[in-house]
Amino acid sequence: MPDSPIIEVVDLVRRFADRTVINDISFRIDRGETLVIMGGSGCGKSTLLRHIIGSMKPTSGSVKIFGEEITTMNEREIARIRGRFGMLFQSGALLASLTVGENVALPLVQHTKMSDDEIEEIVEQKLQMVGLTGFENLKPAEISGGMKKRVGLARALALDPELLFSDEPTSGLDPIMTAVVDQLTLKLTREAGMTAVVVTHDMTSAFRIATRMIMLGHGDIIAQGTPEEIRTSPNAEVQQFINGEADGPIPLNLSQDEHEHHRHVKPRPCVAARGRFHLKTS
Ligand SMILES: Nc1ncnc2c1ncn2[C@@H]1O[C@H](COP(=O)(O)OP(=O)(O)OP(=O)(O)O)[C@@H](O)[C@H]1O
Ligand SMILES: [Mg+2]
Image (tube, rainbow, N blue to C red; front, side, top):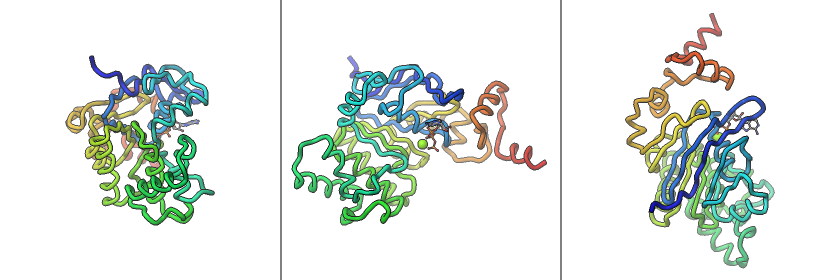
């Protein structure tokens, strides 16, 4: 018998007013996997994560996390589940009035009965993991963007979660610090059995950590598979994305309505940046 999935998303739909951002998506994540979610800016990656962690309710569909339906849970039930996973938000989401150390301590204060000394020790250890020893007394406003990201990661790891969500963990980090964060993810998944769901635009990082990849676009899953399957995918949008090419089937700066329009007039292989630039200036 295969293990039951740690996350199971079935027929998830999310509309904002008349815009469908997530259009009937289904997938599962098994324990120990590192799932990388990719896709163009604004395609719905962060929105998808918010639905999985229960901070947004879908228009329809089901999300099970640790085998429990989260879409119908109340705040109290969601708070209980929150003690089992860590989340690094895209913006860092640090509390400005708290120090770095207090931010990392927050989940420990909220979800455990540890003493101040125990908390301090864990905070120190987590900050060391992300290369921020000695910064505990600074406020978020006093550290750099990349440092904020790493504090967010230290906070997400404070409770030694069995499941970690990271939204753009390495954006704003230099290549060396990116490698450090990737190594940390690999160590925790391989050695501690953690499951990771990572949204990233950084293809070096994505291929370094992923055991499976999903590419989102037009509200759907465009492609999914092992890193090798994605690397060799015959899908032109996947190839354009992973190779970072300006010209290709993925349109630039199209609103969702225009996306819809282009979907209906498919096949239309080259609605590229240059084509639109032309339209605007001619
Ligand atoms: N609360 C909201 N109300 C209305 N629209 C929303 C809301 N949250 C997200 N959206 C819309 O959903 C779409 C997807 O946003 P999302 O933040 O999930 O994109 P993303 O894939 O994470 O992009 P990026 O790579 O830039 O972070 C966007 O068009 C956004 O405007
Ligand atoms: Mg996002």
